[in-house]
Length: 196
Image 1 (cartoon, rainbow, N blue to C red):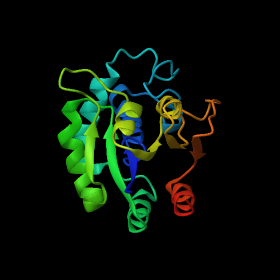
Image 2: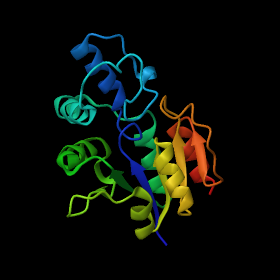
Image 3: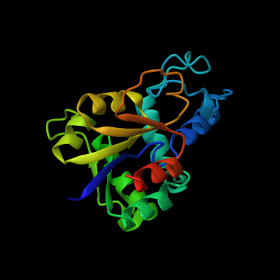
């Protein structure tokens, strides 16, 4: 049986939010660092809470403007190559809207070439989003690699194992589940999966 691992893109494969922080500093002239991002959706963050902005639109603009400069997350490229060599296959998944699909696809092909099987976005034909857990379950994922604890909790409630990468927006979250493994790096993920 093929061992399929689903992988989130933003701040799991692609260094996204450090670029968001830089764009926020430049555009709004505020002291704002990556470490200040204590909420994934940029809500309630003191340094930017008075700024009126549609952060989703801002994200899309940032991605389109900087996509050629977005870096891969440390260890992710080598980790995926090494894990592929021992029988794992990878599918990239994103909850971002369909308007980002072509940009993500191009970025993945550039940085991960043949090591990511496909890209799946969670929007169905009617404009509704399907959960990552439901999608992973339909495709028999052995696990998911993610940076958002709420997705990991949903996966766990659907009996799907996940690795949660430590990020500023999930450090303060204390929820645990036996199917969620908190990790600091792709190096840790590689070691754990290589021993399974």
